[in-house]
Image (cartoon, rainbow, N blue to C red; front, side):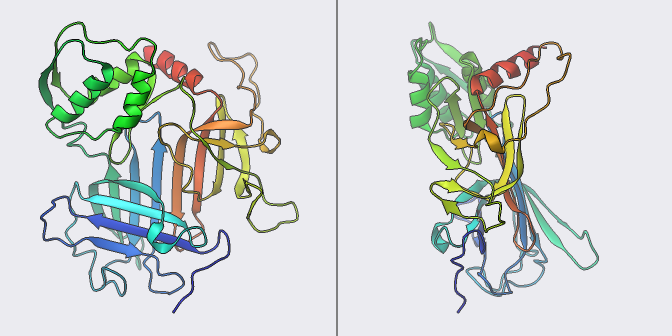
Amino acid sequence: MPVRSSTPFFGRAYSLTISPKEKDSKRPTIVVTSDEFEPSALRITFDVAQYAFSAMWQAEIVIWNADGEITDGPSKGMNLYQAIIREGDMVKLCAAYQADYPPDKLPVIWEGPIFYTIQDRPEVTDRRLRIQCLIDRAMTTNNFINETINPLTTQFDQARFIAEKSLNKISIDARQVQTVLDNRRENSKLPRAKTYFGNPHNYLTQIADMNSFLSWFDGKKWNLDDAKAPIGKLVATYAPVTPAGGMPVRMGGITQTLIGQPQQTQLGVTFKVLLDPAVQVMAPLNQVRIPPQYVRQAPIAYPLPEGQGPPVPLVDNYVVVGVRFVGDTRGNAWYSEITGLANVLSAVQLLGELQAH
């Protein structure tokens, strides 16, 4: 019986679950998991993107050489190439390191519907099943609403009404959305009754834009956050490994897993670390800390382009507005690319100016 690795940042653990969209479907749930150090585990690669400035998130998950039967685990005996996988089936991808989480409590880095699948053969000896994931079209672009709401309705009640009355109901984080909207100084109410007709996604985006809020769809629901509101908790502090070339470790609240050198950008910083599922884009937006001495400064162009100032000064804490998870269960890739901003409000204003032009 194999033993899970207790060495930090060494043994990789993952779990991929594909569930039928229909609750009463006779199609079985497909489960592909890491089996620790056994050689029978399927190779899986993934590229998951989470961005608070992107209206919709997406992910690509690839299962390699799955044309034979799965030899172990919950889906033993199943052939993934022969399995029926349809648009709208739900995918849950978990990934981490073996020493950090028990097998049944791996953190989720993507959960959402399948857009389409592709079977191809990039090399002579390899075959792969590519699963493209995107927010459910029935919930967003192919959705519809034709309802009238009463006057004197708050913006939160409007958002909840739109979500519930849509042809295909939209999930929202009611507690977070209500907190964000109710904290406004001027929580405007509708002066008269209003009819919603068309795509409900557009009306939810209008509520966010009216308040200069961030809004995005993750894999399952609509999220809203106020760039002026208190930012979420500090989830990680990163530093490079010791100069002597020691192993990546967590020491004194600092995670020594930086890959390369963080780069200063116009509005913050971008950097890469060993895969860390604790850092994700969620409302309220999380923070990470990068000591300024580890960041490569960006050069200042002269003369400065019209309408553009110098990069914002380096700070200690950055607000996480983008995370990209890249992994290969049998390769070198197993990292997170993080985009942090020193001032989220400045970025929102800049985006508004760019859209205006």
